Length: 289
Length: 303
Image (cartoon, rainbow over all chains, first blue to last red):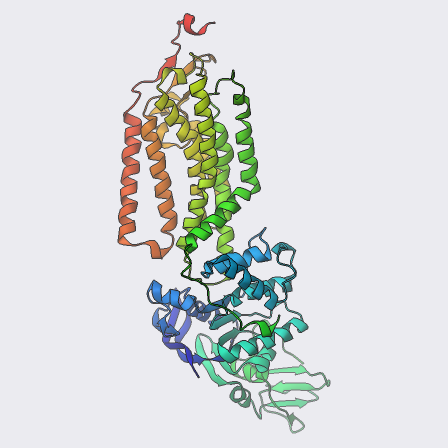
């Protein structure tokens, strides 16, 4: 595994709140999922990795460069980085091509011919090649999300950081998106922050779970799933002290955690089961029978 | 999305002869020139020149208000919106190798577009002024050609530069969309209050951009009398240009990477220059207010 990211005892505070609390981990080539409930510190971590913010303590290294180092070091990271924020506010009045061309210039694609070729390539990669001159405001939500993803692909970066990339994509687009990520994970590093646990099982090699600013789990996907083995059951009624219970497609109740009654049958766990056992149900999301 | 096309990429050509800031400047200049508010303002401003195409028509002494208002004041909002639009692009990409200061520099370069239109307006007006002098009872007839040129250059051209630069600065300091408009309204109010019509405020009027240096103001309710106010418009031009440079550097310094000791020294030097030229604009040049014609001098204006 080629090492891409290394964090060593990193702490980041916002006034009195600790967003990241003395965390250390390493990420190499492949697709790594970043999971965690809201407020776990995921966005802060992505800000540090994208050189947009600096840690209060500890070191953040990307490709061997300090993410909080000199301008030259940060620029060296940025030249190999593609970043998709969770929310993108597009400029009004711009076309899809104009938007991507502007960002290509910001990514130092100074030669016009090469820049235009690269913009057309990423438009094609997100299946917007037939709509280059359309105003962004006329694109649908899913098309805008794909356009935002396209800008992250400019220059085929060695490190791709994606924050909730599949939000707003329909099932077909999500399937193609997974194929794209799998392809990219073979020769580069992808860090995928998501709440879509099915995406994790489909495309990710590694999982990093943050909870209240600390690393709750770091390892490969099978190990993560195995951590829930023997703690997931189906029955006709929910397990009383389960972390979460819900009705499955077979009209039976799936329960994660707790003490199962004698009638409960153990089943194979999923990424979602392991996640729920680790951090509990996501606040604000109702998981019930 | 097509996964099979992702790996065939050539690296960006960073050794290109055209640096990123120049590319961005060119893009921002084109985008500024295409903004409907600018196109409308510039069109109306240039339309104000049409009467001067008639050889017998002298230049209106107050015509410089057209570029100042229609290009300079509107430029505050146009510029701010351009900066915010480019910020949204940069935010969408997270962190990019080209820093914020480079984008700011490109936006400052784009301010040359409105400045160019204002300069064209002044050049045409001044050419007509030389070939067809203004009436003898006008304020311009009392002063030298360089005095007239300095006043017109400041009012007609520098205002078209200063307004858009102020817009860049505002956008760099806040993302509140109402600030450029409120600033414009505030500047208009200040210009009216400090233009020199109110005698107690004449000494401090030179602090205010786009104020007047003279005109047919109507002294003592007499609309046919003209006035020339005190001070040096030559130094005032330098003062306004120094203010533009201060604002530009302040905008650039919003990017922390620009806060080097050398830039700090340049900023301090510009501030000192602005203060000195401001004081010189107030205390040199025309020592007393001139009213033309003087009350009772009916022969020079009664015709």
